[in-house]
Length: 377
Image (tube, rainbow, N blue to C red):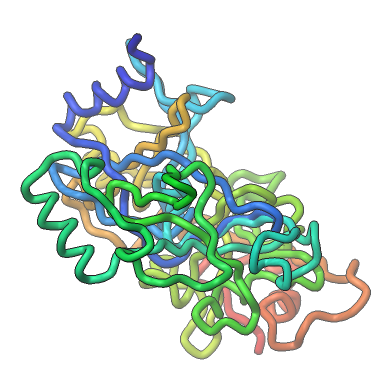
C-alpha cells in the first residue's frame, strides 16, 4: 500500500526531478540527551538535482537558518504526528541517522562503555555530531562503485578495516542499521554518531562555550514567549532540552551568516530545531519556491525542512535552487532580540570569562538585531 508520505515524496520528484539523498555533515550540530543513552536518530532526505547533496552539521541548524516543519496539499501531505499544517524554520536539521555536523543534542548521565567516567549518572550532557568516515582506500573504492552502480546499499563494507578511528567516547546514533553488532554506514558511506562535549576539548571549544555542566544550563536563542516578533537569548536548563537536537551558530561557525560577536569577543548560541514557525509558505512548485526565497522577506533563510509522518525529513536548500548562501541580509537578523539571563537564582557566580557572565552584564537589554549585540568585556 502506498502511504501519503510516499505519495508526497513521489510528487516532489515529479515536480522537481529531484531525488532524495542524505547530506554530508557540516560544523555545528549538537544534541541533548542523557549520558545513559546516545542521541536519537532520524531518517533524512535532501533534494539534490541528480547529485549528492552537500550537507549539514547536526541539528544543526543548517545555520545559516533552515526551515523545518510540515506541509499538506491535495493528495499528499508532509507532517509529523502532531500536525500536518505547521511549518517551522530551523537550521541544520539532523541528516538521516542523526543531526548534521553543526548539530548538538542533550542526553542525561549514565554509564555506557567509556562514558562512565564523564559525569554522574542522570546528568544532562551535550553531545556533538561526529560521523565515522571511511579511510582513503575505502572511499576511493566506494566512489568507483557509485560511478558504476545506482544503489550504494549494494556496496560491501568491512567496518573494522574500512573506517578511520574515532574517539573512545564516540557512540553511533540510535536506529542506524547494525550488522553482526557493528553499525553500518549510510548511503553516503558515513556512520553517523556523537561525542560528548567536554570543556577542555579544543576541537569543541565553541560548543562547550554555550553550556555549563555545573549549573546544568545552556545558552539558547528562541522566540520570546510573550512576543513572537522578538527573539530572546536565555540560559535554559539542560533538562528542558533532553532528547532534542539543536544547532550551534555564532562567530566561528559556518561563516557566521548572522554576524554574531567578533574575532576578539566571539559569541555562540544554540537554536532548538523546529523553534521557528513559517507563516507564509509557498506552494510546492519550483518557480514559486524560487520566487519565495528571492522575493519574500521570510524567505531570506538557508532552506526548508518538511517532517513526514513516517519520520523522514525532506529538505530543500537554497543551493538546490541555484541560490547563494550565506546572504547579506538574513530574515533572522530582521528581528529585535532581548537578553534574559536571570542568573541571580544560582548560588554562586559563573566564571567571569564565560559567555553566561558576559551576557548577564547586558541582561534585560534589547537590541535591534543579533549583529548589534556587543559584549561588555
